[in-house]
Length: 122
Image (cartoon, rainbow, N blue to C red; front, side, top):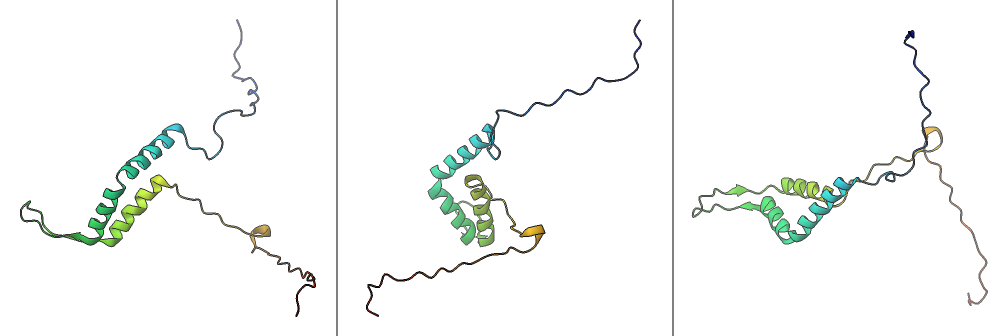
């Protein structure tokens, strides 16, 4: 009989990662979803504009259809537009630029004076 002492073998060495997506590349499902939303927005560009205008300006009462008046809400229309835009154009990550050790950036401006060609009659 063999005796089990609970010891484990050394963990296997990890291999270098090869293949796969490049960093920042969306997965297939995400890209297909964005493409679908973009197609829907493109196909309904005129409607989306009208819908946003309706939200921003409101709607008068329609007694024939039994619809009450709705006040306009420009802030809501802008919010809706912002939400739609996120599907067509992804948000950009904020990047903070700092100098050495997190300090302010140092810039160097160089001005170079060049002798003229002598063709001008000043």
